[in-house]
Length: 345
Image (cartoon, rainbow, N blue to C red; front, side):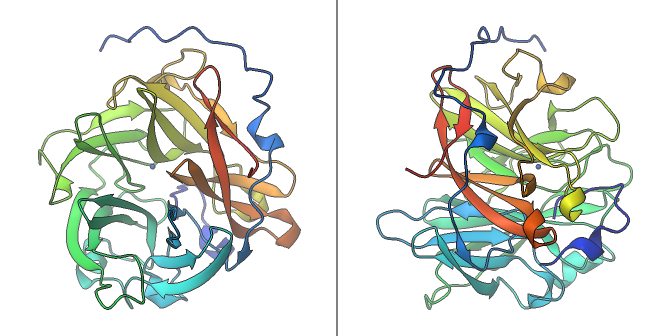
């Protein structure tokens, strides 16, 4: 669940991230690059009630997986797991643990579910980063669990609790939720995170621990709307053709058909920034290019992740009283290098 500090009633709604390098000249959208929202996501079936989906796309006949924000009424509030043989038909597989680890409940008083997972594979190990927090507060923790397989039927399937990665509290100017992992061209891992407060932050990680490489070092600041209440979160970074693209969700989530979430994007030639939007506006100064927003019955799309050129996000289905739904769409790169979303081909 992404943080929305101004929402007092959000829990009732749920049903189930120096010198500026000269940016490239803004280019006109090629004729083929129609607005993303004109395209339709895949037609999915099965259990689609996934908030903040972390997608692991299948390949070579392997199953697909989506990990999502937990619900206190299902599996003790821990991270939910869904699988699909083809990316279209989805089955609920339960949660990673029966209950929230005791240390998290002590670190974050009042926590009742775990939010916004990210799953990243490195050297045969799957690293799951997830958040623990409560609405409207930044007493939060990003924690880590590891596994050697994603298949719940595998005898070796077990999510091992690896403890805390980054924490925040009332004296901090950031919120430690919504992790997104990227490796740079040298293979160095980084984690983007943040929600409201000072916006999106970044820290360097270390393999194989998956923890922060330089504990105690101040996190980098890579995106900020510069306007109260600074509703930017759900950071996710994708590399393409030498550029790093920072996807974020802006606005209010988790309010059903009243949500105004939308997916925004900027890019940089360095994973740590500076990121700029399509018009050259720095993301640290409120910049951002719209990738996807409310269209028809698809209200408030956001909480995104990308795997194998497929973007996963949730939206609220106006035709189903605002119930949350999983959506998948291919990401393609326009002639000007910027991402657009497409129908399935």
